[in-house]
Image (cartoon, rainbow, N blue to C red):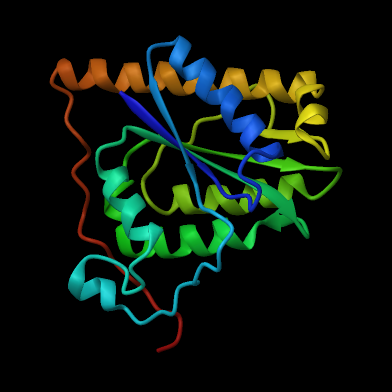
Length: 206
């Protein structure tokens, strides 16, 4: 079983990475393969709403979003991490997830996911809430922890000194590993995926 952890910070080895690495290490201890994926620090296009992906099955902007979608198809779970910028997730992770879930949401659907955020002081709860919206619209079980999935600090060393925050990351990893193993056991016992009704879309303007 494999979990991909997405670092949505422009800093490859900063505070967000420090929290994600703590999760990755704990997952590995529990027999779950963990891969860290960095969104980078180069300009990343947001979704243009062109709907080209409806016809082609992938985003018209052929960059790391399409690369990740292919990776996602073979993964069992996900953790998306972001620093807090103006009480919201980073522009990198927001653009990345907007396009990923719109064009490749089918590769993530029904797989457990979690969001984690890193902040110096405030705004963590609203950023955390925004990230969870992606999962709850895509039939993805949301993995929780003993507290909201956040760490505090202005440097990686300060994050490591946030003992409660780092423990929250490890507990999150334990819960992710447990849920993935439960899902695997269910599949082996013959429990299939839910069979959904055809989607009904209701517009409020008639």
